Length: 183
Image (cartoon, rainbow, N blue to C red):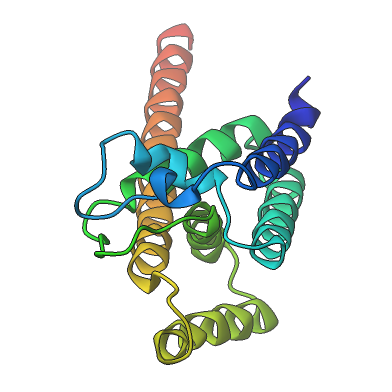
């Protein structure tokens, strides 16, 4: 079942996009005046099929790659990304509603940027972040949610890494104590 999380997400995204032909997606986007539940629902609605295609592909690719590269399951990564997408909404409100799952993608980007520092990867991340500086001049993309989610992704994996190191150190200390008492 675990391997199917990303496919289920893609089906939900496409389903919400198809539903948006009959409903107004603005009602599901978050803004400074929207209902509390829109901080979650905004991720599943997209303004155009290009928007959906790009965000869906990015989310799928990150979940697949990170699921193969890390010890984290795709389900854990997806849940983390969705939580990060909700957290990114606080402090990134605009008058116009924000929609799309790109905040969650940037959360995963931040998680991956913490661990991987190969030259080509660093260049790619820098290019994406520089594009965030230029984007507001050409479109209505919510750069704040992207930036906050990226930073939260780095902080999240930093916390997990330090907790794992602490637990590993405690386990090693306990093992040493046990070894010393036996010998």
